[in-house]
Amino acid sequence: MTHPLLVVDAANVVGSVPDGWWRDRASAAARLRDDLVAVAEHGLPDLPGPLDVVLVVEGRARHVESVPGVRVVSAAGSGDDAIVDVVRDNPPQRPCTVVTADRALRHRVADLGAAVLGPRAVRRPG
Image: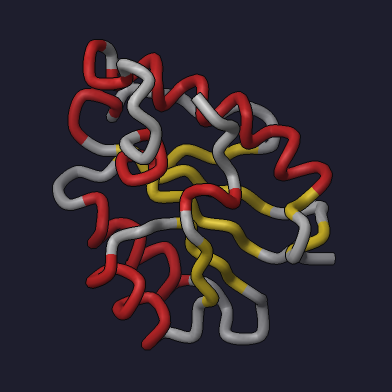
């Protein structure tokens, strides 16, 4: 059985809490990845688990690696373009949700049939 897909915009979600993430972007992305393991297993309030979770990283966080439960996709260029590619490659019958606050990205993935949640859906308060 295929689980619903949750695609997380790492840069946008990490940047949503002013907790000093800018000092070490890779470590901040790795902490988010680790927090998402529980999300993959248990889901979110409006999106029951288990979920297949993809964390899209870019820039200085590009070397963050996947862990069991969370697949990390390293964007060669634009993180937004990589997220759109992940959504576009998702089979149409499989539910897909993208976590981002980026307005332009929200529109792009919604046009492909994805639901959208804001960063608070997966972030613990800093």
